[in-house]
Image (tube, rainbow, N blue to C red; front, side, top):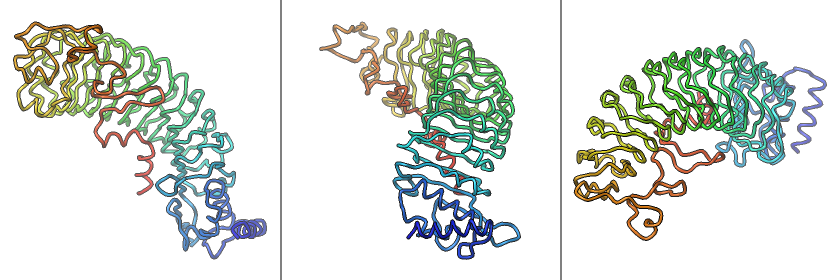
Length: 470
């Protein structure tokens, strides 16, 4: 029945061109094209029959239409397919029909978890067929592979480009720098390689840049400082090298900077003290080989700071801590820090996670009772051979020796059958991993210690979904 309906409609398209299909309120060619597109994607073979008037009498939650100005003709402006609408989202043989080019008013194309079996490529032809879209979100599609075509620059109206959690390979084409209207760019969780394009200075409206979890290399281009609208940058889990560019200090709207798990080295530029809106500074697992930046106290809104595994040395500056009134989480573990803990650290009233383990800190640990109650097990100072405490209860909770007793440094040989309070935090020890992330492989990203609202930022589909609701 559905195929007969499409056959009749196709015959009318051949005869009538752009005439109006009165029952649907749409142009015949556009209606036929929409039904072809949905038929190429969805599992339900009766979709066309059940939604013969998708803009009027038989709507579908993933399709939106608008009426042309000065007429009563409907045009399709959005196609959104995801597990929230239909499960499974698409059939195993899903592909994007070339008839998508007939949807001349399409502004949003969002296909989430749609291409899972049959190979799909973002070819020049596909890009040219949707040249008018403003939002393109193809996320969590295991069979979406190949490269990003240079023809992507033809999408002049594009504001949001989300191609995250696919299997894209190759380099990021330099032509992507021509998309001057971009507001969000998310290419995370792919296998993209090569450099970050130098021609990024044209993204003056870009607010979110996420290139994390790829195999990008070379240095971070200094022109990133020209992207004055940037609020969130995530370049984590790549092979980026060189120094952190001082030009990042020009991004006055920046709230999140995540450069973790790369090979960045050198000093942390003092220009970052100009980032008055910064809330999250994540630099962990980079061989920076420097000291704890003294300017942190100049960041009034900073909530999370993570420098674990950065080869930091020297003391923790007291002046840094006194200005961090909004700090909720601080990670300085797995470094070479020395000296005593400054008492200012116990006065951080909003702090709820503190990891100072695996350093060379010395002296007595005497946190106030209210501090201990607030943090509990989220306070980690283990494997600092010079630390001790004067209270037995604190000694047991923090797994550090009492100052009245002689510290015992266990080895692998003595650890097997005895007290394990001083043991090293091993990679496969789920109970003793650093507080800011757990586990993680190149294919399974760590669970970052971010508040729930920030986790939304790591799912482009959420950003797109919120946009689609407006």
